[in-house]
Image (cartoon, rainbow, N blue to C red; front, top):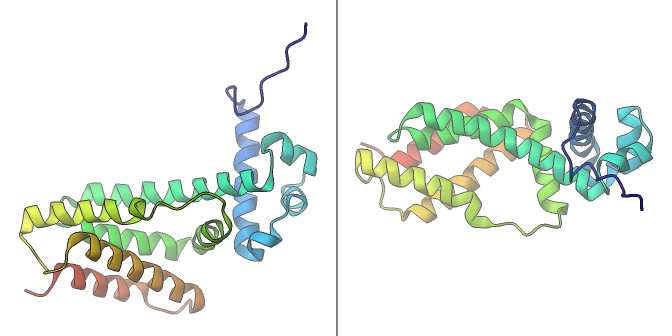
Length: 196
């Protein structure tokens, strides 16, 4: 009896396979950012990567799978960037670091921003809203512990409002590349910390 080789998700990938998957994720980010979810077909991904559609399917079982992998790749880069900034800031300044690094990263990587929007809009997975506001609420709580209450807002609500403000600033930057996101981030931070 012959055993079937394991699919790439079930075994450790070779260096070449990891490199190809990384290339396919980057190509997918580019296509989704440039053409939208509908424009990032498997054929378009294959063409841009310089391989066949069958080769794409060797690495990812479907368009949804490669888009999900690209989304997770982009989201991972964002989380790592923001996490590094927050850790370096200390508890009292962590919310400010969160806002500034989130807006800064998305400003510097507009394709990542478009990828996140498209994947969230067209993806199949349910979105856990608490996964967005809870980390910021925790940072706000730690800042309150260090500085004392800065606003009268309930922390969950303040985190949701802050997330919405970040989204709006990033969306405005996509529409107007000259929009001053640094000044906008400073205004959001001022709202979080209140006036002295």
